[in-house]
Length: 399
Ligand SMILES: *Cc1c(COP(=O)(O)O)cnc(C)c1O
Image (cartoon, rainbow, N blue to C red; front, top):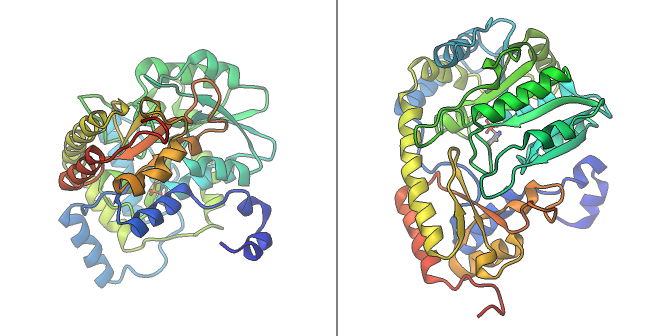
């Protein structure tokens, strides 16, 4: 971007820069690379979902939906939460439809965080968290998940809380590490939240996409947590429609109202013909996401084997779309340098995890980590693995 335009931008935008995903996807197109950077599938969602959206589009669902979302979708979200997790919600006051989970995150942070409030957030973090904490004038207090097992340390979590802490921003299954927080870790979060009377916002967009028989447990189901937990999710990941941007926020009525209070000035409403289609998909049960999770697990195994064969130390994810590698075994100190060289060397694009840390050089942080997406067809992963095997991936001067 030319600097005169950048100099006219507000500080909050100029300071954020372009997302790494836009930069790396553009690099993939320019170099003809296999794009294992941005996390979007290369197959469509279920035909019945697509048909329902087309039907709604042709039958009048083309004007503003209510800001909080159409009743049918709010009711379907409530039924999904009850059927799957035993969470009971009033669809009229405890559920709001958002423009993807991204707007639910924005609405939650703008709606709940005042300037100076502290937000405890898992690091590495999804990059919209930091932008929205900044926009709200909040202060982030990261708690780092460290390789090789990326476990949440309860003492570090407790130590990150101060008397200015307003909320904990959780994400499980966790992007980018692929961790699915277990009962012990969730209990630690619940204990800290109860002890310090904190709110918790939990991003559960990968709730259906867990592997090896692991099950996602929503934090809101733990004792004393329903009244202080705002749960965010989306149809994008579970139903392979990331471009649809139909998400939601669910929890106590006052927290949902805070999200709606902010979101009415963002998009107000969106996706009118998509909302009834997502409602029907939620009510059709979990067969599609369950099958998707099975496919993703096989694709994970295929990519992990290929990355290891290419000489990369690779951590096996328990859920999500992503695997993480450590590039030091090939002589690289920086995942950013590795990722910038990778398209030329191998014709593959991946994301340097360093952008997901406050200080990627802190002990146990991720300067040397790289994130790879496996939400791609097996033939695409096979091509990426073939290219990686054929390339010299060692750092300059290593060989
Ligand atoms: C993809 C993703 C989102 C965004 O979801 P949308 O519904 O596409 O807005 C939010 N959080 C995490 C952790 C994600 O990976």
